[in-house]
Image (tube, rainbow, N blue to C red; front, side, top):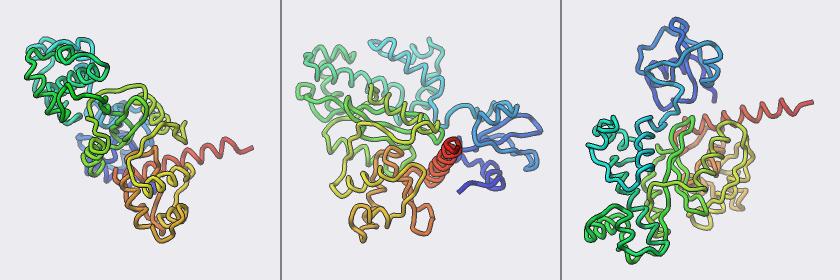
Length: 354
């Protein structure tokens, strides 16, 4: 499954960003190194040297490219986004206007574009959602509607009720449950989205996952809870373990998970968790493991509906003949994950040998 240097060079030549963060290219003639998708002119193949990670390129004396910024995670929040989020958190009562952004050295159109790209909403919409989320939490804790309205920064009671109902599908006085919180984690394979409450993690997926929107709608329908931007202790626990997995120091997740599936699907997902780190199983073998040899097609379907990527390791299931099969996050990611686990397992075995 490992890519040879010729294939890697073609990936750079085609500026294929789907492999960003999976390997790096050093350019002997300039002394810089880049990530796949770099917009700079591709050098001659004989001047290129490939590295598994950015650390290897740095140790070899190469400098980060100033055009593709290979030291940043793919999909990582920009400095501008981080700055704006910090501004909102530091002054939650303010109604952020374009004038406020300009006063903080931020171009409003740039803020709008970057927030839309990362979160699927503009900066003003993000602020509005955060304020409404605070209002809902106030109501869930027993505060009055007027207190929640003021917490959200609304002067008009009717405007607050309309905005609240449009976001949550119910009036403020009917609030009885807290929302699910959505947040983003940067990884070497791109951004992952997480959805948690105060007790469990409901979803962890790459943002490029097929039908991600359908997964979100499934959660809101199943639990009748809105999904709003925010993070909590569970989110931070998920982030810590995901990063440890990519670092190679964690092989088994220990997270309070909440699966949303049928009894059959839950059985398949449990069997996935029983596949040892660094190993694979075929769909047929997984069907046998759950006691139904003929259910390999249903097993494959259940794999595709797994909403906890990596945590429930559906990437460890391949076709009987050894081909990768499918993966909702993209076959390039499945290949990387299997190669990563194989490398870590091999390294661990060498270290354990007498």
